[in-house]
Image 1 (tube, rainbow, N blue to C red):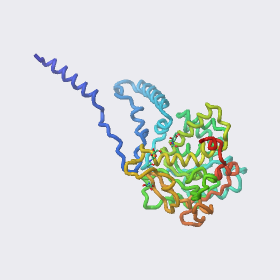
Image 2: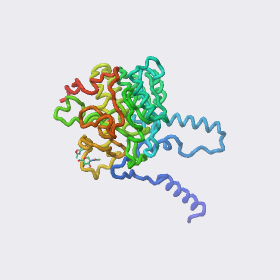
Image 3: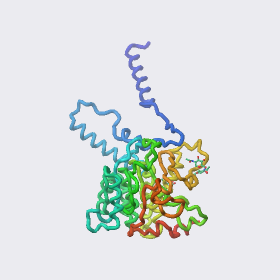
Image 4: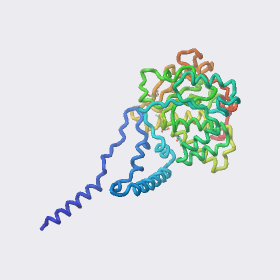
Length: 382
Ligand SMILES: *[C@@H]1O[C@H](CO)[C@@H](O)[C@H](O)[C@H]1NC(C)=O
Ligand SMILES: *[C@@H]1O[C@H](CO)[C@@H](O)[C@H](O)[C@H]1NC(C)=O
Ligand SMILES: *[C@@H]1O[C@H](CO)[C@@H](O)[C@H](O)[C@H]1NC(C)=O
């Protein structure tokens, strides 16, 4: 016979079973609209890791709760640090495509413009960015300041910090810095020897919805000739002397992750200081270009089911108008490389010319960047 007591106990057991067997909220599978980027997986983050399930009763004194919360935060951070680097970065620098492009202009140089050692030849280029963007925060970051800034921004991701600190050449750090600052803060990065020709508000056509765009890039070279490999490391090369991004963009997360892994691999293998010819492949335009194509072809972000093949240089060669792929706008070669006299680039006074690269960064081995010598690594590979 079932007594009332027994019935109550059975009901409670049943409730408990139901409670534990079913997830709190229905699990919604990632549903991706065709060729639109899905939310990066890591960006579903903080809640789950930060908030302990079943908050402590509020009757406890606040101080106890505060201590508990601190401990839990520490635990959560330790948990995050055990994740792969890209997941850590997604946690610390979440991406919101609908957010605004932050009004920052980031540049790096040995001296700030207020120093009398700041080279006169960079005054017009540096000033052009402020003139075209009077309401933006415009920072020229010195090596010393960059070090502090990266330490501050990336203290919670020790591998990235270690990679930055381990880099044996200023050029590697300068390359890495642009991806790091844009990943953490967003805005525009521009080399100190680039001239702003048009305000950034004119870079993307009015018909494009800025709430669906997170990255704006240009083309450095599009050498349509059989011997292109003697001049450039990739058939289409995207430029990294000017990049505009919203913080946390997956392309930036990808390149920071890969540069970190590659640098730490070289460090462990004791090859940090050898093979400097490979700057282009380590931190420069080659790896930048690869990261962008890797993103375009990543089924995690793009629904490939309706696509007729992978996205390659063929999708961008010879283009004359801006092109949107997912949340990335690729500008035609004239936009960031006007007046170069090849690859079909238009002149500096072309309406589509936005930024001119003066190639004046004397500290950079420009010969390495523009005309890549055959690197040891390349020669060795079969
Ligand atoms: C990172 O490196 C891996 C392994 O080499 C590669 O498959 C992937 O495409 C790279 N990702 C990016 C964003 O470059
Ligand atoms: C890229 O080119 C391929 C082959 O022509 C085409 O099937 C695909 O739709 C293109 N993708 C984009 C995003 O333009
Ligand atoms: C696209 O790229 C992937 C990975 O590199 C490859 O496995 C696949 O065969 C390619 N698809 C086409 C149609 O080229």
